[in-house]
Image 1 (cartoon, one colour):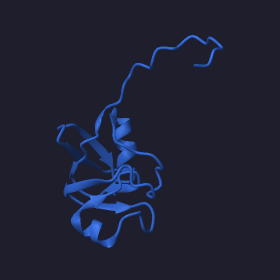
Image 2 (cartoon, one colour; image 1 turned 135 degrees about the horizontal axis):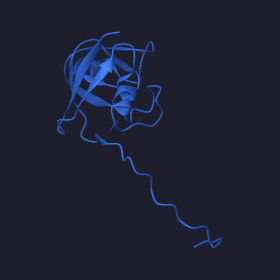
Image 3 (tube, rainbow, N blue to C red; image 1 turned 180 degrees about the vertical axis):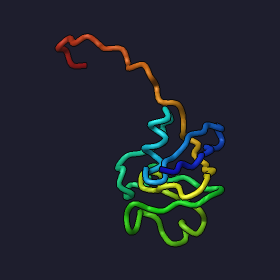
Length: 110
């Protein structure tokens, strides 16, 4: 299976995306969090700008207009890399490895 390098701007974070895996899942496997919600191409929470490269979609028509697609906007939750990519995703960051500390249950509502 081929993989393609992905560079995220402005953070400079990098990951490898297998050709048949959505960018969102590949980023998460590499410990990188991209904004997301629905994971099926409709909510547009993950929408980011593709600066270089090309993608294909795992669904027939993702939630982007023709103009947005022509301008380079992509939905990483359903986009799969077909070449090395550079994307602009200001909300990207490392996935927190440590879970939030547990709060004791008090039974009281505030």
